[in-house]
Image (cartoon, rainbow, N blue to C red):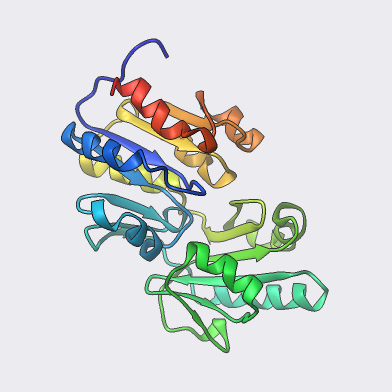
Length: 265
């Protein structure tokens, strides 16, 4: 880490943080001036990311819904839509889990909105954190939208309770633990890494010109797409093993500090 990152055009792909530090906004202006593309790469929906970055969204590429939906200036660059039978089968699995006493709920993620059946405030409060566009429906298996992901929120441990119940989908789809309480089901061809590689090809940017930051299992493939891959301190152990470098935690503004150091800002 003793040298500066000196390329003119780079991608800085950053996974979710619990809060956006105030210092990000002036940094984004400086990165734009230097020709650096800053790309939020998130399990959150596009509408949520677009609202978070509304004042600086022009020209920014949003890698949303764990790479299943990539948008720039309101124009879809890529998407990976599930066959309609898949979200229906997952919803039925969730209903069986609930019957068996598991405190879990499904979020069926479409391009236009997210859809939920659960109406209790505790669950909806978690949904609102990541899906500003969401609708309560009677039957999530009957929504009229292109579904790109199904996310399950487990009030217990998603890795140890809900994820194993989805094992039958793992043979044909990705079942990814994306947080302590979240599990995402997507097509096998969809992940943040695939989306980032597509962006690199489109813009003529190499892995050596790409810096990424991750902290959970849904970031693994993205780490593989960049030579400058950073695990945040406190990240999932597998993320730490996969990344080439370690950054300070999000609580210590690790992304901003690392970008500043490596790019010499």
